Image 1 (cartoon, helix red, strand yellow):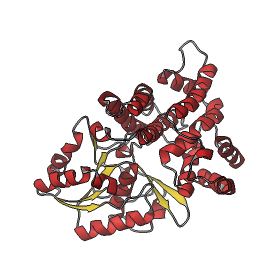
Image 2 (image 1 turned 90 degrees about the horizontal axis):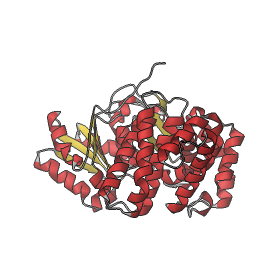
Image 3 (image 1 turned 120 degrees about the horizontal axis):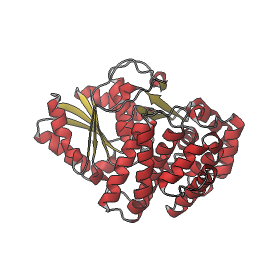
Image 4 (image 1 turned 120 degrees about the vertical axis):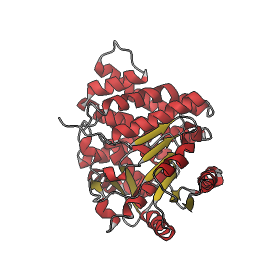
Length: 386
């Protein structure tokens, strides 16, 4: 079996890592950049701090701060127009998965022509984009180290997933200090997103000996740190553990794959605009229960790695402990089920079941699941998760 493992050529992690941006740009001779971020990062003062540091070093920075959650095609095209007008030589992404994904696609569109949808799928980007420098501010998506971007086509209500090594950042600056101000609800959502990445990377049909170690390390770190980070937002050790978990989860799933949870989660985000981590958390217990027969030993290892199951328990018993534990984790972290989310109206959810199931299958992710579902089984899983 041949395995491929793509990550950024440079990953700098630890307290204060974000301040390495200027030296990294300087060593590459870059002095005009587009900073892709959102208005929260501007209002928080973090984006202005980055701009000031770059300006002091003689690096001209144009700011695109109009990225919305679940970035859209229009977001990307607006950022691309600004990049071209500013004659930027590189892209800097600051924020959670939305600004980083938006920045990735801006960077590749600067050197690739054609409609964005032609890059949807695996290995569809012909040319490398401008150099991308990613600074994550949430410990969740792992996008700073992945070759994956997800952009919403609002005209079709579809999330387009692109997977190509040309989407990889050149440099990831992983600074856990930037997560110390995250509120508990965001900590919970991105934390379970991280856990989902680790689990799906490990049980995926495309898992390899190269992806298993970071996937299991991600899972272990979540088990050790998520609830502490949720209860104690300024706990530096817990925040560092979760930031490392997110980065390792990203390394793992981008080189194996995500599976059914993500396939079913994207349509919920596209139609109801539920945050990605929240929709993953809502689906994870039901999908795990469905998928367990296809990888009992692996799900048991997940339960043991989280510290939820004793070593002496059988694989079947440990896997069931995992399902119960995931449900209980959502309760402890105050993540509501689908039926209780304010953005999801019951009648529209029922009316959308067929479209969501079709879009989930079309994404390709369910085909990597330990048990590959049929259309009708996906509809039933949505109803169970409700």
